[in-house]
Length: 68
Image 1 (cartoon, one colour):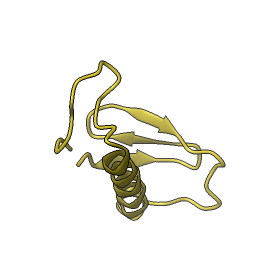
Image 2 (image 1 turned 120 degrees about the horizontal axis):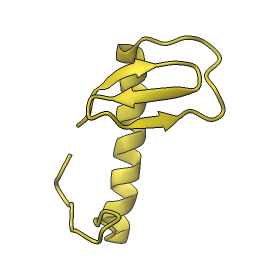
Image 3 (image 1 turned 135 degrees about the vertical axis):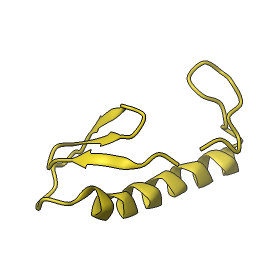
Image 4 (image 1 turned 45 degrees about the vertical axis):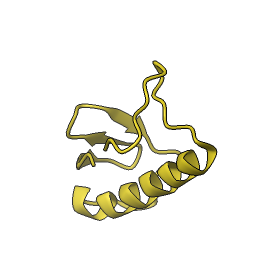
C-alpha cells in the first residue's frame, strides 16, 4: 500500500507521486501519519467493493487483484 507523504487541508500526496484532492477540505491540519489511517480505511473499503463486484481491473483493463 502506498504511503501518504504530504497532506494539506485540500490535497494529499502518495509516495508514488500521485496527488489527490480532498473534498470537502479538512477542518484541521493533519500529519501524513494521521491521514494515513484514513487513507488506508478508505482504500480498504474501495477494495472490498471492487472484490464484491469482481471489478479488479485498472483503467487500462489489466487485472490488478492482489496488487497494492
